Amino acid sequence: MAGTQAGKSRTEQDLTGMKLFAGNAHKDLGLRVADYLQVELGRMTSTRFSDGEIRIQVDESARGNDVFIIQPTCAPVNDSLMELLILLDAFRRASASRITVVIPYYGYARQDKKLKPREPITARLVADLIEEAGAHRVVCVDLHAEQIQGFFDIPVDHLYGGPILGRHFVELGFTEDDDVVVVSPDVAGVTRARALAEMLRAPIAIIAKRRPEPNKVDIVEIIGDVSGKRCLMIDDMIDTGGSIIQGAEALLKRGAVEVHAAATHAVFSGNASQRLQDSIVTSVVTLDTVPIPSVKHFPKLKILPASPLIGEAIRRIHKNESISTLFDDFR
Image (cartoon, rainbow, N blue to C red; front, side, top):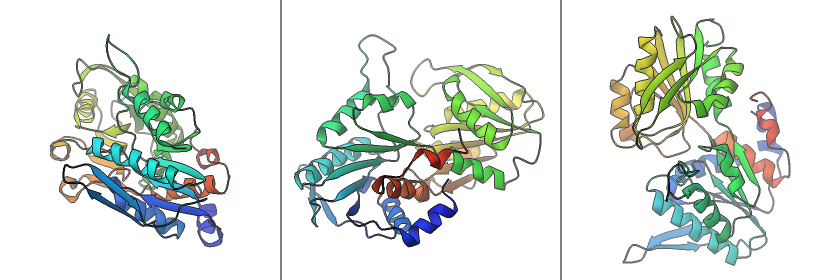
């Protein structure tokens, strides 16, 4: 990522005219990004009407400012999404000069195309809602499908968590041995796995699977040599943990020595944390793009900070600097 340049920017940057706000979906991440940028998080009040409707009041002027709103549309996803739309409307009516929505986790992304008759494309619907509510620019981290960027008619900056995950495994020595293989848990994730494999100078393998229904997985075949290897499975998210656990079991049956799991978004629905802890997976590494309450922490879990990546992207957008150069070593 930015390395020395990012460290230098925090002490010499001029962020005049920029204001940073965070919704309630992940206030802690907003505070960490504000700390990275060395700015104060904007003041706003969020309450509820008696019937449960969300009430937002921005407690400082935003007129003429370059406003950034941090709000992952994570669980409770409907509340998080609705709050984001209300925030957008508030700042649009407050005459902000530009409103950039930072969505570390983009909810409703798994229905990104029609596979069956009469299915909605919720990823496009959410994009339309965000754009119509007043966003001028969108920043996302590891979208479930890259084509979601094309659902917007406004600029979208797509950030990658892979370099953060990759550096973690480099520090653990995963580039020093020839017994490491990076595994994509499905065909759709091959590009992500290949980028990490190149960073670690390792070969890749692919798990071919099918989904008979949502959150259900059938392993069909494993493409590549995993016998005697330490396998590193990388995905964009871990939801119920089913894909990771079944994939790990299939890899070990093919002769793998151990399986590590890495993902950007730790959704951890239901009892996913306990299932992963009790599974044969050696370790699970994620970013903090969504809040991970302490009750969902488990000994095998390692959480890496996303705030330097998001903070540096915000700084560069405000300063009209390149975002793509953040990932020159991860393409």
